[in-house]
Amino acid sequence: MADGGMGGRGSPSPLPPPATQLAPGSWCESDGWCWYNPLPSGNFLRAVAGAGRTDLWIGGETFISGPSSNALHFDGGRWNIVPSPLGIIDGIWAASDGDVWFVGDDAAFTGMGAIAHWDGVAITLATSVGAEVVTDVWGSAAGDVYAVGGDYGSGNEIALHWDGGAWTPILGGVAGRLVDGSGPSDVWIGGPAGLLHFDGASWSPVAGLEGQSVTALAVAAPGDVWVVVTLASGEQLTYHLDASGLRISLMHARPSRRTTALSASSPQNVWMVGDAEGADGLILHYDGTSWLSAPDSPSPLQEVAHVPGFGDIAVGARGTILRLTVDPLPGFIDLRLGSDTTLAGVFGSSPSDMWAVGDAGTVWHHDGRAVSAVPAGTSANLRDVWGTGPNDVWAVGAAGTVVHYDGSAFTAVASGTTVDLHAVFTARPDDVWIGGDGPTLLHWDGTSMTPVTLAGADPGTAVLDLHGIAAGDVWLSGGGFVGTVQQGYVAHFDGAAWSPVERLTFSIMSLSPPLLRVWQLAADDVWVSAGQLSLRGGGPDAYMHFDGTSWTELLQDPTTQPPPEPPFMFPNRDRPSFVFGPHDRWRADFFGIWQRNSN
Image 1 (cartoon, rainbow, N blue to C red):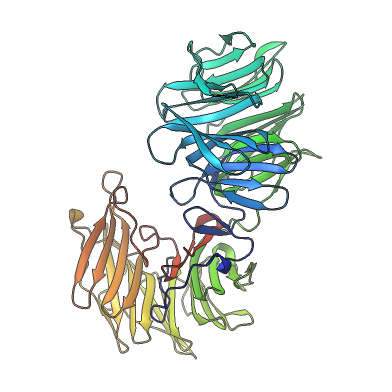
Image 2: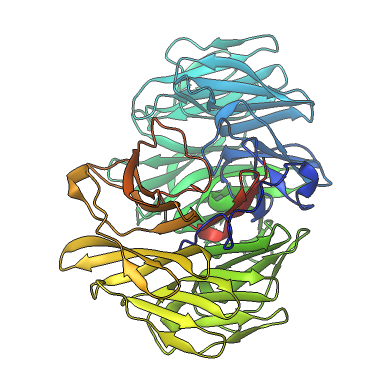
């Protein structure tokens, strides 16, 4: 579960922000967040295209909401993150390594779609359009490029053409969400109203698909086209159009297996990707005769493209980048470095001694240069990690799991319980506090583990977080259900005993929810977070602050108010973070996300 910020022994001095502190192999977003796992990024990827045999571009949506979504660029030697003026990159097409088009929406949040261009030096905004988003781009040559898009949830589609000098709207009802082709006289546009074809002189609708919602499109050769139609029920049909006419090639029996994209480099090499039951990625291949399924990918897939020099590349959620293979059967090679195992705790004694723990006994260590896996000696899900230095690190997790690292290896420590443990904090090697369900509170004195009773804690209470500034000044937060009513719980340790704090109630509907996180910066500066209070589908982030005398409520609307300064690192979520100071912040998350910001 979440662990507190700002270090365990007071507040270290803010660190300077020189880029030389970043480990080799880290890729940094424009908002300052650098990726340590997975590499090159963990963003939601939506688009992929190649500009040569050693030139690959990938784009999508920045994982942390920032001013823009950057593009990933592989130049044959290494990955680089290139700043983009787009808020989301939905499509990419490259004429050459110095002539690449990107489409999406405007990072300035103008509510307009946007087209951007890479000239070999930078990605700059080329034009904005009236629709909310430009969803796809394709061209036959540098002076013959098409872009399409529309408004979210409406039928307002557009189509534009680049002639080498300007982008101009295509009139006469030509519009859609997808575009592909095989040459200047064979261009196809698909969208909610069906499929359109351009023969070099005029546009015409494709008979049999009028009024059908085309949600995936690929052109294998002149007059050889694949489309996926999504029905109102959510079911999908894959159509193949060639010299033999239009026919259904594949019926998707389960709406939960949803196709998002098609790619066809030839009539014998067609790929289909999408979601497989919501958590994994769907991959199918057509070899000119029949469809065969590949194993599901580790994440849902959003786009697929044939990139000369790289092969068939699929991208999607959690930074997924796959090279698709067909020998001997359809499959894939994961091009990411790292793991997608969910992380639930992060701690560091210094920027060159950082730890993260997560599911299935996952433990990672960052030594200031590289990230490496450390055997935990357990396969249990680990939920928190804390310590006092490189030779004294504790991790706790499911079913009473406690392990300790002495600088050489992790060894199991008997906890005396089988309940799930969520939090650990230590100010000295012989003074360790561990919390979990029950309520469970354990104390390690260097020799033995002793259970401690929490006064006023109801049986349904769980200890969710622990943090302090000294052995005699520690706080815990948590809560749970008392009958059908949720109640929060906060207590303080003064070196002699734990004392519960009066019930902290938020003004909205008099809520007293569980307190997910606690931070102590000083004796008179303590913060707890209840996360986002949900009211009719949303609500403000809720905090309480203790000034040494009384508690004060702070409700922050995340849609209108900027995020607070450290130690508030994503306090509205039960996601782990750690803060040395304003110039060194760390976070971990689901699917192996591990990042650092030293701005």
